[in-house]
Length: 227
Image (cartoon, rainbow, N blue to C red; front, side):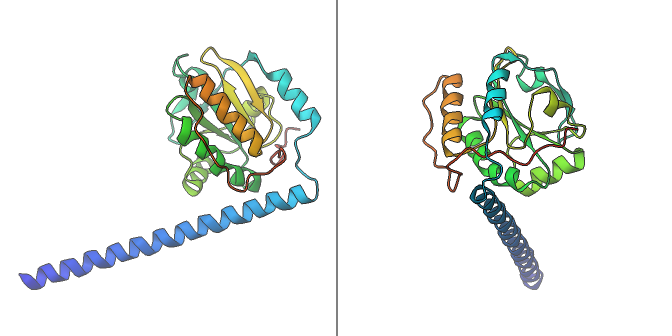
């Protein structure tokens, strides 16, 4: 009897050790990918590429305070979501985060948007929008540990309807279905601005956040191919 118990304990310890090793390797792989993505962003900034242009800013301002287009898309859990679902039937603001698959800019921005979600996700609904099918959405969410659902937009219908040209754009939608703000990229200042805006929309004090290694200048992600 004791021998059986000992064998069982050894087996469980072995399983636990294997799980720990796998989890450690998985975390290391994800961290390496994030560092590579941030290095890519830093290189693009160095050569003057991917900067948010005045034209991007102008178009984003024009979109602000216009009606959000209706949407209907499959989320990574296989459930179809509409604009009403995203805003919880008009009772909650929503944040749409636009993702381009295999885009290092989106990968670099992901942890910053996750920080904002941790701070304000209880008061606003965060939803990603990716330019791929269900498998793509699931793979992205699994690899990046995205804490919010991701909608599939393989034909870029949502991207077009929300006047998005590049990845890492962020749209704030009011409960009434109005695009209150469209941010054409990210930077430390823009991320801080998002946080203050989300806090004001939720009626709470801003949460102090530090966005480690965020770009100093507004940075737009890789372009979606809209032609």
